[in-house]
Amino acid sequence: MLQKETIIDLIQTAIEQLNYSYTPYSNFKVGAALLGKNNKIYTGCNIENAAYTPTNCAERTAFFKAVSEGVRDFQAICVVGGKDGILTEYAAPCGVCRQVMMEFCNPDEFQIILATSTEQYEIFTLSELMPMGFGPGNLA
Ligand code: THU
Image 1 (cartoon, rainbow, N blue to C red):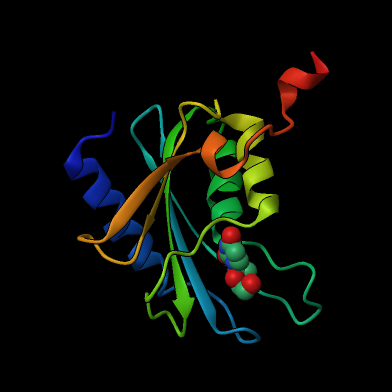
Image 2: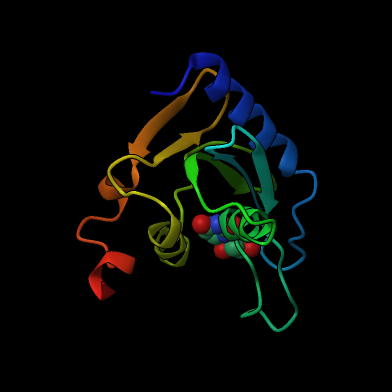
């Protein structure tokens, strides 16, 4: 169970990442704040590319930063996003990002915070957003 102050911290950190989002093509800005079980926050923003397909989502930026530093255990992620960085509705993770979460997170425990502000947010488990997901357990 996440503490309220942790939730607020993750939302504020995710919102800050909108400043770094590189989106010359869509101008849809996304920020993420990923909380490790080590209680450290790994940040991410979306990074677009003129060839389009190399674009990396904010969530995967955060995961890959953490994993590249040897961190593989996670509690929660906050994701915020919107056109021009204006947060009017929840920016739910795309299917590819949900699949990356499946690789490293327990789907019944990992918390996904979708927010438009520190006052307006909802929390889902990964299993709620990815029912019957395929993960490492299927190959065991
Ligand atoms: N995007 C994310 O960063 N995360 C998601 O889960 C959905 C989409 C980005 C990718 C692209 O830069 C922009 O949003 C529009 O698709």
